[in-house]
Length: 91
View (cartoon, helix red, strand yellow):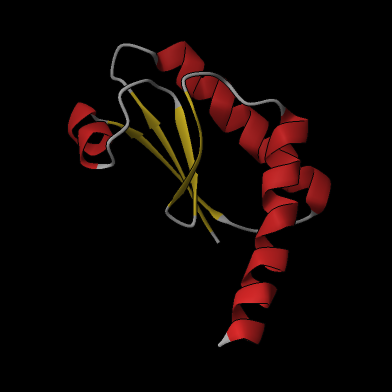
């Protein structure tokens, strides 16, 4: 699983808050993931995100414009295996 956190270069505090909440959610679930933090305006624009911070899980935008709560991130991570299982059954 890959988790990307995209932030504007001048919003360092909001970015760190998002990173700490993501790590807390991963610890709560006992899940391992690659967590990447980007503070690059170009990366935001390439993903068509205009407000930061943004949370992408496996290249899907899950939330943008605010720091997600730990409970929200846990829900996003819990949805992921169910989604992949449904897609596998269709194919």
